Image (tube, rainbow, N blue to C red):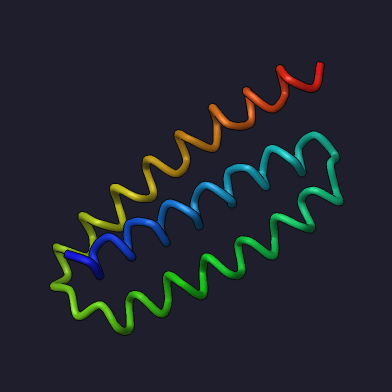
Length: 88
């Protein structure tokens, strides 16, 4: 269960930061995108570490990672909209 949660959090973070970085690059916020790229690297390392060490069955891994990824991209969209409204 604990390793499954680690996979979920790592997948969430990776997809969240990838989605957020996409928005930043689209809006020419180059410095923000460069900084977020570091967070992508860290979250991808955590995801790789979790995959290697979790010992999850393939289906269990897919369920944890898929849940983390789909919530991560959804949250990144709403987070970016929230930031955009605050900075107008």
